[in-house]
Image (cartoon, rainbow, N blue to C red; front, side, top):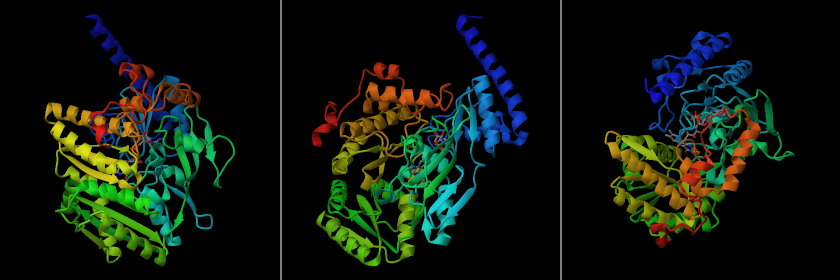
Length: 500
Ligand SMILES: Cc1cc2nc3c(=O)[nH]c(=O)nc-3n(C[C@H](O)[C@H](O)[C@H](O)COP(=O)(O)OP(=O)(O)OC[C@H]3O[C@@H](n4cnc5c(N)ncnc54)[C@H](O)[C@@H]3O)c2cc1C
């Protein structure tokens, strides 16, 4: 047996021993039906929504009490087993991708709404509660939970906090972090940290914000207190269609500059519009090069006046057609098209790769032109779906994983978009997190002092380094391998920068 073969034999033998030890200990904590370890049982957990990366863990554990969860972490510490936490697995950056030497913990059974407090307008939730369920439960008090990712029918509050999820209504009401009052977190060492409070401010460092967006790397979210908002008296949505995508991008910047604060300001390009129309039949004009949905909410008078202002701006910006949803049914249908845009694009291509960068809004129009040029250069189609009001891009790059180099091209194309976003003063993630996907691009966005601080925070909260290791924050050595590519706005010699 050669040296390399022996090494891999040793490591797979060690892995088997570790798996046996782990399973033996897990059986003392959980009933057998809540421990999965055969290949067929674990396949549904092999990836999250970024399905190009797959991996099987040593086992999947499905606890439903804090006591069980604490005991599981104690076993993982004892045997030095890394832990990946999973909510619904809808993440789009590989955050919940299992590690082959690790345990996957599903939080699906922590699914109780512990309290809805209409007087304080809050909801106390377990992390496995689905996002949409919160608004459904609060509706009896005429309240709702504002962050509304398009995946809200499936994704969990724990996953939303870990990714700092956004959604179509985050332009006015903020991301998850702006709607979270308090979070309870179980550390890898088995301590409960309560971060934040019931009021708007709490003394000390803002650990609540630190845990939000921490991608399962600093602690396991076991409880959350979120804000609920009164359902607005009225909400109206305008659909504006354009023959020119740059004009549509510029119209978004005009709306924001005018002082109107829409509840949602979303944009789709021609391909996304056509796919959404075929999938959800929202009655979009399928010959449009771009469609914008602009929703305003508030009291009747305010809504009526903002809608009129927005309509005039769209017409001045070159809109071919502006249509107001006649009633609640049409409004819901218009949003159903936008919210179903990802699965709709999934029907017109064997695979798609969803990017998630942000750019300053005034650069939206030019960015769209750049993406279109890149699409020609790479020979891959792109459907653009944007949280346009937030400057949050979601170009969906269409490819076929059966063709060996298309995935590589799609990844390089996606990286180009993110690098250009950083060069324009934006960021590599607007709401989907970094996960496995954008590790290299983090080297573009952050310099060593920032990355070192991230690593120090991880060490302070997870000294054994067992929580979701290898995700979200790149190794400094990887960044130097890439040639110390950190960029500031304007200093990247990017070929596409000229048009901005
Ligand atoms: C069709 C589609 C549309 C989408 N639209 C949006 C959108 O509009 N806006 C948006 O922001 N996102 C969107 N997403 C992405 C995704 O739904 C969100 O990132 C969501 O927050 C993930 O929640 P989840 O429960 O599925 O988490 P998972 O995918 O299971 O996990 C995500 C991350 O959270 C960690 N995690 C999960 N639970 C816990 C916990 N209890 N404690 C600690 N860490 C935990 C995981 O380790 C992982 O790092 C979309 C996804 C799809 C498939």
